[in-house]
Amino acid sequence: MHERSSVSELVTCLKGELDRYSPGGKLPSSRALVERFKVSPVTVSRAVAQLAAEGLVVTRPGSGAFRAEARVAVPVPGDTSWQEVSLSGAGGPEVVPRTVDASGVLVTLAAPPSGVIEFNGGYLHSGLQPERALAAALARAGRRPGAWGRPPTCGLADLRAWFAREIGGTLTGPDVLVTAGGQSALATALRALAPPGAPVLVESPTYPGMLAAARATGLRPVPVPMDADGVRPDLLEAAFRATGAKVFVCQPLFHNPTGVVLAPERRERVVRAARQAGAFVVEDDFARHLAHDDAGPLPEPLAADDPDGVVIHVRSLTKITSPSLRVGALAARGPVRERLRAIQVVDSFFVPRPLQEAALELVGSPAWERHRRTVAAELGSRRTAMTAAVRSRLPGLVLAHVPSGGGSIWLRLPGPGAEEPALVAAALRAGVAVAPGRPYHCAEPPAGHIRLSFAAVSGSTEIAEGVGRLRTAVDEVGTMGG
Image 1: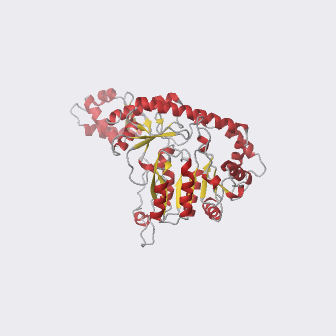
Image 2: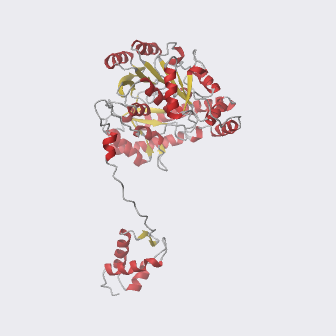
Image 3: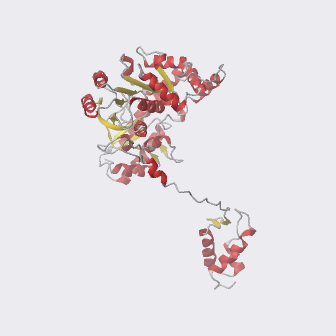
């Protein structure tokens, strides 16, 4: 072949010879092709590029060209467009449209790419999880007689009694249902307490997983603003009157995401407002075991001083142990307890007995209190490291409250809310994942926010590195660095 031979002729020749090479096999070098076909290096380069564009070869800089792996036939997709109409709820005015948006939850569940610092996590870092104690508890549990048999639908009696003692007051084991973690308990409570289409009052901001569960059930979340002392009782009372809602969901202790604690003088007023409205309070006590070592005495749960059954109490062992120990509790008094039990049975029958037995083994072992003390000290230390780093490196981001429990801090952006997605994206490019604030609001947020987790990272060194990377993102966005 002469120098003037076209690229297309060389491509044709090379295609005819591809069968000589197995998939992944290396083709002759560019120099060998130049000598063999008597063409210029440019012609060879263009011919190989065309073969690569057609998916016949793969080029690796510095290594050469290789025959591509055999293509797998892609099946012709079916027509699923009909589902859009079906899922829209079309069918008459009595149908309550539902939306199922898990994006706010997935932010804290999805692991970031390798090398990205996880300031968006929702669970303890693996270094803080009691892995050895859990392994030992599960091994002991597996040897218990009947450990793999069918448990009672309400949960093991001993575990229910333990949760009742933890909650306090006059609650007893029969008042408790064992659930598959706190999220399952919240979803069950929402389904039990309000029909589709009904309003449900929520703190603003609040936990995105609860908002997702409410909307998936067909409920309409209505925000009730908070301040530094928790939910505002005056606005809660007004919201009950205006909406006729029969449910209020709150996190009185180390609220997610703000970290605030409901003030003592507001506790009774919140429960009284619900009682006067004939409504329930769903108390999500997710962070009681995440108190820091400087938190001081904790207030009792609202459910501990509630003889009238206004408060439905939710708690879980998951946050203090491992994402996979999905064991929680729903506590309630009165007829509502039977409705909660019935819904749970329909949804999941029961929580697997080995998990319940392992939970009992764990909380009954000396390792349990040691683990709680370790977590309290570590979370307090990491909170201090993160707040100091943020105030030093990111003075333009507003930290309104330093929490004494939980695993994160809540930062307000000084600019308009439109800057929030830009900052989140820039942070990821800089190598740190943060949680956007928008999913924590069920209506228009008053400002942009981000949530930073100090529980999901390895320690103060990673915190300092992550805040440094976030500073790079802030500088890129341009108006928040102080």
